[in-house]
Length: 241
Image (tube, rainbow, N blue to C red):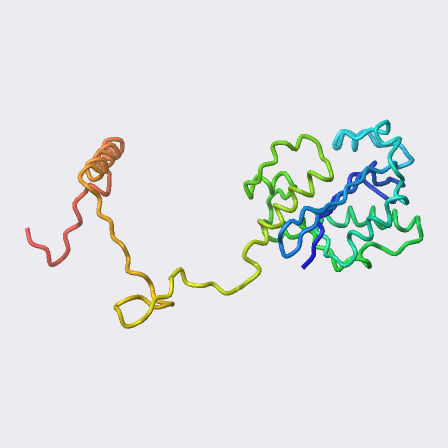
């Protein structure tokens, strides 16, 4: 399966107010493995960038002045994503902006060119209801290092999102759970597949027992003689004095 992890940066929050894409990044995965192929473009939006958006991604009009317009990168972009499943965090936002750009060029929506769209924000909300599911929060939850992410950037965010997606979907390729037992031949007193290995019981040594008793004594002192583990068991009806 070919998948493309995608992210954009924009001049503002709403394409319906004329805001434009200023950065797009795509990285390729095939059969859940990164291939090393990627597409990354900065784009001249032909309009101002909102101060709030600039504070998030740090991209300026001065930097974008000599960058291509979206029309110039459209063919390359569509060729890269064609036939692949797109993986996007908060997909409606990015898809809305991409389709607005394509619509200006009288081209078909991107979701008619690709094989489908997976929204990792929606997936995260289903997996972790009631919790924060921003990309940073998911990196923390899945122990993915994002310490180098001081500003939002499309290429870095796709790399982090790819790791998050793989962590979120790990184990979904198969519903078959194999027993943790290696197959051995029968007839020699050995274990066959599907049987449990003998349970290994390791007894505490004298030093560990002594340390345990010290801990219980401390608990007993703090609880003023109420440590249950040091009290003798209650005498039953059949016990003798």
